[in-house]
Length: 434
Ligand code: SF4
Image (cartoon, rainbow, N blue to C red):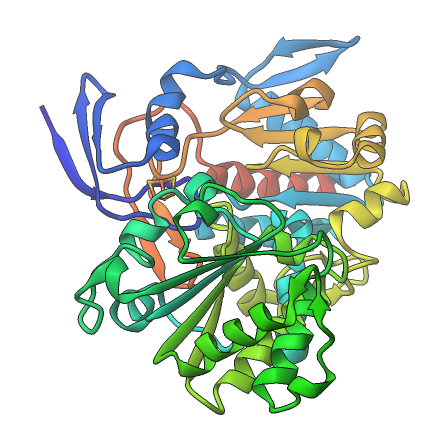
């Protein structure tokens, strides 16, 4: 019975690469080292609602068809559309993302990633102020003060703290958790906050106020800080600023509480400025707690191929980027898109109601291994192999370290990369015939 060591878990941005998988009769029968989320990913493919065959919606009903028929139907939608949105491509390989970008260019589409509803504001902040960062290996080996701001790794990245941060033991951090100070800043006492040395409870949507107060103190202007900031007493903010200044190596891990609350990208912008200020006193870095296992990979591939990390519009024949105008939700809420590809993501479940309502009105092509709410509004459904289990490929961890995902079992399904390549070929053929 084959035992595969050092498999990579293709679920969250921690991209754990120490998973041991036992395979019997082309089925995964045992998983070691994965957390409960990772475990459900590896075994989920045998339990969840798998899309078993390509399908086309005819008179309201989904009818099974061959891959060739589904690709042809999808390509027809693409060549007849004037403004296609291609969205998702974050739970797949960089190789597939590269082909998806080529397809978007070929069809003059907008292509956007799940960052649109996640860490997109962090990208905007990085463009404006930079993002002084580090690898998770550096954090493991050096960081003595860890801030988890607006994120809850116990639930969203369960092995993050044991592998890379709070509990891990490194070269200069051999005492592990005992040698590190852990601070959680959040609006509620999460399970992560319960493990912290210090929990700072802030008012909802007031992150920028606290960031600004911390910056004022770090820069020697404590006198301008009022007695209470963001629901936190001045004394507590002063103590936190001292903890940061006196650290040997600070890392601020930040999540949705920072990027999706009031002030959005300005919060990330503020964290970046705070990190720069702290570097006058000590060593400080920031890392976004990226969600999908390869959302960072989308940003990497898109940036080196088009110059932009997300929300890229090819309508003019060259890449144009203006989030707020060219983001996935922008073109859906404005009812601008007249067709959509939703790949390796579930807009049906995770987009705001107005955007989903518009998706339901236009032709939707879904590329995914599993049935989900997007399937309910899709017109052409193309099943895909699960990357990291049924297909190999490259992914980027939350700290932009690339890792190679292994193929663990055989599959009857095409990979996302093959599907995107087939779509490019069919679109070219239809355009030539037009
Ligand atoms: S922490 Fe994330 S990458 Fe690691 S095993 Fe759990 S789900 Fe997978």
